[in-house]
Length: 108
Image: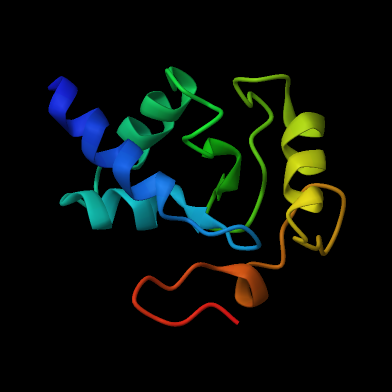
């Protein structure tokens, strides 16, 4: 994978607003290839700037946080999402229907 692909992924992830989440597949589609979900996961795992690239806002298609969250495990990701105002339907799943990011729509 070209470094440019990761840059595209990071640019998209930077756009996810506080209080919203995106899925790996959604990021892949926005990056230009809907089959890049695993590439997105890898790019986020090696995130060079977690302070400015909020990879914790990316969950799987069912809203589940990553058990392999690169910066401290799923518990840290959950705490970071809760600090953003994200609510969970159970211990590890975000209410995706309510909190999914919809690019191009106003955030309310």
